[in-house]
Image (cartoon, rainbow, N blue to C red):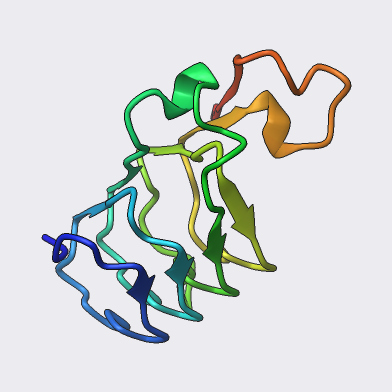
Length: 130
């Protein structure tokens, strides 16, 4: 559980916390540092909370972005997969954020990638098979 009002998760803050299985990132977080959750091999659930109404497009223009630095959720060796990752609408990621971390189900908002349909509040959902 993160402290109310926390805005930054520092570089390597939870690096090597092997038994960490669930992480819920509050809507107040603006920066997740480099390798903040590196080698948390048992992580299955990663959830990002958004402020009320954000997904409805009500406060999108006024809301600050969340920056996730390089290798924030990566692993040294290929590890167990995240069951599901829902990328928040206000997210910007650097390289290799999920290096060696398989994701079974990924949902990203259409405006996560530049698109002529970025005003549509819809999600692309990808599911791993095989």
